[in-house]
Length: 139
Image (cartoon, rainbow, N blue to C red; front, side):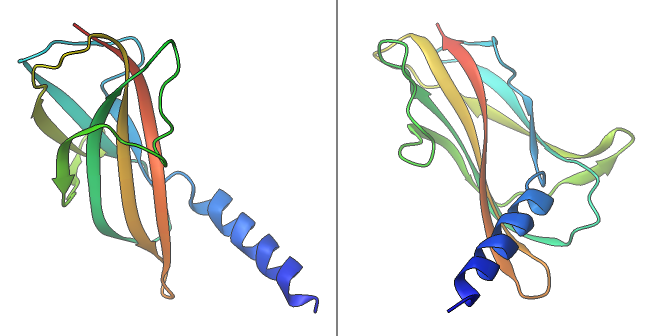
């Protein structure tokens, strides 16, 4: 049946069109996060003509071992926030800041900060699960 290749093309095209529904403004690659201290995570919604019904986000940090960081789709690490995301309009666009507290860990050093986002796209809707990362160092 020829339907499967057509479905694959449609799903691939949909993912590429809808692939930029969020961005991680902070922390950025190379930032330092300090155990026991608060820091700000910023989730940005770039301008997009696509309707995306927000389901929620998770913000997490996972330590890297021997220079290898876990894939977010396999392990998020320590979840610092999980819940709704309601970006508001600002002169620079739509975003929401989250004040997070990095607990004291046994491990320090290289880590990956991950933003996980779930939304429902379009009138269908189509679920979209996406990740944005920053390579950070935990001190």
